Amino acid sequence: MPRQIDPELLDHASPADARANLADIERINRWFGGERALHAELDRLPPIGTILDVAAGNGWLARSLARRFGSRVVSLDRSERTLALAPHPKVAADARALPFADASFDVVVSSLFLHHLTDDEAAAWLASCARIARRAVVCVDLERTRFAERFLALTRPLFRWHAITVADGATSVRAAFTPAELRHLAARAAIGPVRIRRAWPWQRLVLSFVK
Image (cartoon, rainbow, N blue to C red):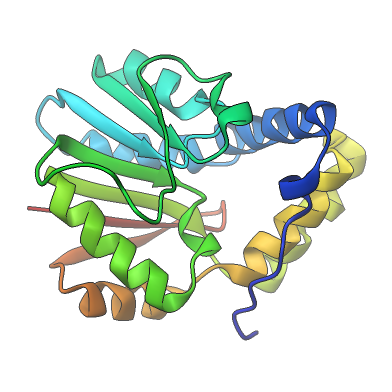
């Protein structure tokens, strides 16, 4: 299916609905491979002093990384309302324009952010991440498949996902990339060599670039 970017309901959700959706996103990542896939990539690196978590949301990933790797994790998100739930240190800023100098962090990571960007934005953003990372960039995102598009709706009776989670989940999958598209983006960003792998059976793609 062709890539399609549409607005998500979370952008206009009430505070209560937003909290429920963010809790679902954390559950999905913990139970269905997103957190595990990122940990596996970072396990390949020497000890990590500092990490930037881009589009950190409520900071669930920052907490996970700090516990696992003992790193100083900076959370960045454009939503001050959401970022209020994240641990310190944190920065409210647009992830499309990262406000950091070259080589500011050992590693830059993101989870479920890349699909929000157009192709042009994604290529520019990857180049920006490579600029501010001293050692590595790791992005975990969805893979655009029919099964992934339907997964949350199919499993809602069992896991009681919030309605926004189900709707935005399908929207996110339709906006996600394929492995070939990620390689093309990395080439446009002039970074490499990149490692792109599927995290089976969780319909996740992992892009990593180690300097």
